[in-house]
Image 1: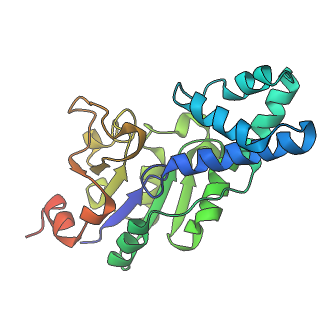
Image 2: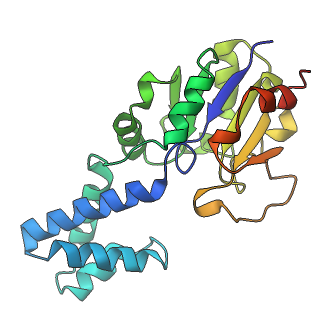
Length: 226
């Protein structure tokens, strides 16, 4: 039986915090060049504010440094989104891909089209899988938990949902609409949702601590093969 592996991107194949830190560095470099703001101080401030969430970090930084304007906040957001990320795949990602060399592999990721594309390029993932689906390219309403891209993969591979497994980290959206229509699901317990509780009807069928635990034996169990 043909089996297909579909992966989430952020906090599944690499630690998303590394992208955030890379973006903060790019913004700090911009502010140092244009406004003579000390780079290390700006980075330290943003990382400290990150503990309270990402919402208005740039606003707070610019206000503290007395250079605030709405247009400058937008410029900082643009620098953050358009910068070339300094990020690397989790070492276990490459090992996992190598274990399943003969399996068709796909990626489905939500988020800003340019940001997610730049991440995929920086990580070299376009050449490692058959196709990367950035959901917003198909319309915001096609983002997870919509199963739209999973259905597209089924069409491309000519398989039933029961022949595909989705591997992600966010129980709030990654598996919500997949289980009821037959897709297999694996939750990886890492990243910001590591300890997120989830109602069983929204959580994945299986949970693992890292990609290291996803092997042929586990897949045989998931797909009901003895």
